[in-house]
Structure formats: structure tokens, C-alpha cells
Length: 351
Image (cartoon, rainbow, N blue to C red; front, top):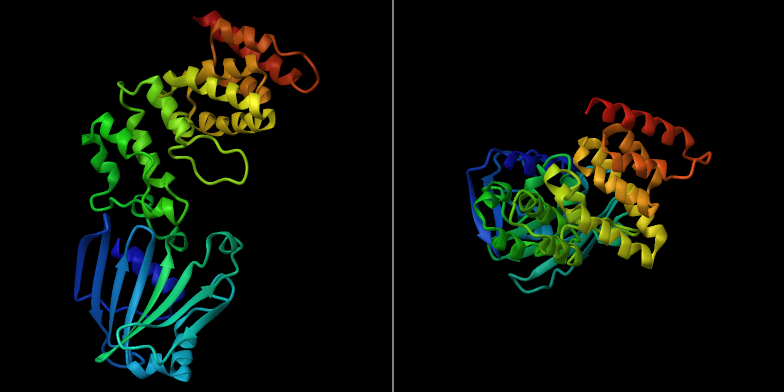
């Protein structure tokens, strides 16, 4: 975990951090935080020590520098220009607001870095800079948003408050009632970063293994949009997406079909888009337990091609045969329809 945070810093800051003198794990505002502190030796451009702070939504590198570095534009510009990695996938520019007359102990620098990344427009800056002046020195803080660290951090270490030990190792000891109560509360990851689904999906994966999870519980998770990620278009409910990745989720097929029927009355294109999107995890997991879902879609005339192809690969019931047979034999589905009927017939003969 510490090495992941250091790799993120090295990716954008041309500064080799020495081995830390101390490292600790603490809980701050309900979040597990990794803190590492160390000192620089030799020629380090005036930087005397560092503090690395890694929380679920960001990683901050704090550097102790001489006061005059933060209070004078020229030394500050030299420090930042030589420190950051520029160009291509790195920083394109940095904006700094310097207030050298700010009282001691207050924020005297505020700024942000700009990358050639379109999503910054919607989600805000991915790198922010701040500075604080004290009587004995000053601290320059560079904060990287966690989405910059996707290549370095394991998923359990990002956007989830419970990290040490990881949430996934804790939830088997929780009751179903505790899991349901915890779902839908993503903390800062949900409130500020639109990523509540990271934590929720861990909870949902555990919930779907529980035999006492009821159809009403499943419907409530749909209604509360638990585990549903941000989307500009139709977005599958998180609990349906997670259910489609495990055979244990197949028992909620009637609830899923009811969701699609209700959605269809509001928007046929949205229902079609979401139904088609559901077959990607189903096919990837090769889950024949969901044949009833494909049959239901064929009866509703949703995701017809995908449902026929799924039936071709996995289904072996008379109901599936009749559902495929009921599809009109026009040019769009004729080949897929014929192949699926042949495969289902072969499986029925073996039974």
C-alpha cells in the first residue's frame, strides 16, 4: 500500500522520496488512513522532510520547505517547475494563487494542476496544491485524486473507508441486516467523488451469498440505486449487475424481469439498452442459471438477439425452446434463431 502511494507520487513528481522514518495507520473521520514520514538528506532543493498521507479518495504529499520559498514567487516557481513531470500524459499547466501576507499558520498558497483529461471538466481538478507558512518553516501540499492512481492501487484500497483490513475481509462476519443498513452510504467517495458504488458492490457481493436475502430486500436495493455507478445514459442498477455475476443471483430473476417491465413502460429504448448491457457479465460468467432471464426477455421482446445467443450457449429447457421459437423468423434473427433451436434440441435429447 505504501509503495502504491509512492508510485503515484513518482508518476507526476520528479522527486525521489527517501525511505520513511516511520509509518502508521490511523482512522480519521471514519476513514482508514496510511501516514508515512521521512527526512531528506543532502542536496534536496531546500526540502527537509516529507509526509505522505493516503486516504480512500486521495493521496497527499506534504513537503517541508523554507518559508521564503512559499512567500516569494520566483523561488516557488522554480521549485514547482523543476519538481513536476510535464507534457504528454503528465501535467500541462499549474495555476497558483499566492498570498504572501497571509498570517502564520493560515493557507498562503492555493492552486491546481491541469491535465489533458476531458473528465476534469465534469469532476473538478485531479491535482490540487496548497501551502502553509509557520514560524519554523513552511509546508507545500500536493494532493492527487485517487482516479490518477488506478494503475497503482488495488480496488479495495480506493474509495472505500474501511481499508485496514479491507472491507471484503470484514463483511463475512456482518449480519444481513448490518449489510443492508450499511449499503448506500459511500461516505466522501459518494458525497464528493460520485463513486459510492465501490464500497456498495463489496456489500452487494456478500449480500447475494446470503440465503436470507429476500426478494423485497433485492427490490429495495434496486429502488435505492445501491451500487449503481454514474452514467449519462441508461444505467443498470448495481444490484442487478452484481447479481448477474454470480449464480446465487439467479433466484432474483422474477424481480429483475419486473424491473425491466416497469422501465419499459417509461422508456422502451432505456429498457432495451439496459437489457442488452446485462448480457456481457452473463456471457463472461457462463451462467446457465440465468436461462429464465433470457426466456423472460424473449417474451418481452427485449434484447432479442442477445437472448437468443445466450439460449444457444446455455439453455436446455422446453420453455427456452418455445421462447426462441416464438421469435418471428425474419432476416435479422433467422440465423441465430435456427442455431439456438438446434442446440436446445440436442440438449433436450440428451436429458
